[in-house]
Length: 261
Image (cartoon, rainbow, N blue to C red):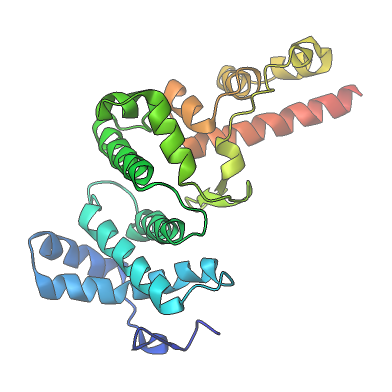
């Protein structure tokens, strides 16, 4: 089935309206003041965003109408929680919310059943994570989430792992218009502390040619096995900046080692 011009939930997708960024800015204060007409116009103008997201889940045998409706729930949640004071486009904020809502739906309807109590714990953990992120201005740790919920850390870990779908390490999780950040950029390498790296003279020489911040990023990422998010929090910059600096540093090191060899 093509998604470009079909009826979904009785809606002719070829006739979905397109809303401009300027119009969205005008509607935000009206929506947040409780104007139903403004809210309806805003949601109608962003249904194409939902349509683009559900294409990622094609080929799973799921009912398209169901996915579209669930995606619309994610869109409404994104609108209700969007902070206009942040320098972020609505679509950048909304897409992960829509994807998350669809994934929760797919998990809840998956043949592999997770107990209701564990799902409840996981969803409460996600809510606690969002609260902490707003309060702290950074990604919350598992320990902080557990403390917020007043439950053992292990319970949070097990619950969150139980509701996770298998995904590709190369699935993009963020794109600010430059280099995309992938899941593999956020995964710790537990073997990264291998002493052989430290003993490698060529790598040590290449690291000496990096500036102080690049050296620190490479050390934290590959010698201490930190994630990009953890490095960003420690250094005080965004994860996107860490990604760019890391890639530049590795490129310089690679060139240096090639010249040496």
